[in-house]
Length: 187
Image (cartoon, rainbow, N blue to C red; front, top):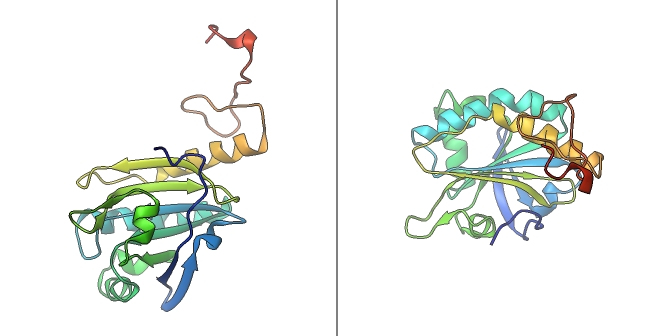
């Protein structure tokens, strides 16, 4: 079953951000755009490269009104220790959620049950708490966070312009499409 168009399911979890622990729930995803980035585990190899890359895009994402949340099945204590010991993770300013109970990973359908770890999953969530995009990648394939910028801009455009859609490789300011009977077969 696809999660596209569904509301984020309830959860409560502990998180780490900027030297502090905090509680996070599905309510944090309402009222703003959110990116939720699942990764398998702290203190690994591909994961810190992805989270650092996401941090490198964080300022631009914030300018777009987007908050970022990373999630693994590690605890918030482990996130703090990783943040303190890794040069790449030490740069991270966004919220790092711990999911040792696997509730969030199951809610987003990214839990690898046999391993107790999450797949690499990226979700864009609109201000109503509804999932608009889903991307899942195999464990050995790192994601490029810059690709999120275009997807978020397109999702925001479509939300703000009912009746219009963004074609492949759409960039902000370029032409969109208005689906209609007259357009069928002319693209």
